[in-house]
Image (cartoon, rainbow, N blue to C red; front, side, top):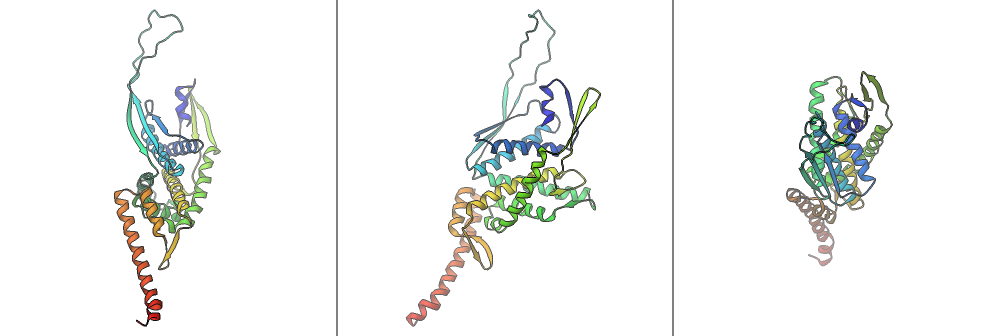
Length: 309
């Protein structure tokens, strides 16, 4: 992101755009960088962040890391670091001209998390669901009558957030076509971040940079749709991967789409925590009951009649 360059290049930059656009840009650039390689660690240095930047960047990078863990199927470490304040510049002393000393600074590890393919769907679901719920509450309160939202996309996002958080895989799988369709839209939409116009103007000693990108899938006059777009991308990327994993292992029960028992067990072992396992085991019990009921009905009609019982 351009503002971060201000400390290492010979100019002063001022970023004029919504803070949540900054967050979306961080998420998009980090996730794109991760998927272009193979990484086991991600370090985020928040030492020189100002105002909203450290918090929004931390959340964006954490979300991108967990999505990446699911997409590649292996764990990745996420660490944030910070340092002691840089000391005030001392008065010049009799040092040789052109030489300076850089003080030793203590680096602190402020956060460390292992994102695993098993736990990441729940993290992505919980984080994204919180973002989308906040989005709905805020827009309905502040922009009544002005809100233009793709309601189907928002509905899909809320359902996926709950499904991933609570391991409701049959619900998620039933949305497979919608997931694929909206994922293509969101991925294409975020690609415009790299080509959307960026306005640059001079303001005294400052170079002012203003980004004009606006996501199309979620729009509002309040400019808070950027966090919602980030949440939608994360949900759709993870859900699409999980749907791909179990494609072809679908059964229909009473007209509803569900996973086979073997697929449920495999997903349960791969992606469930203790709470999620209890939920999935309940789904398995329901399917087994249906299977047993169908088998009993078959036996009574065919096997029973042939034996005369």
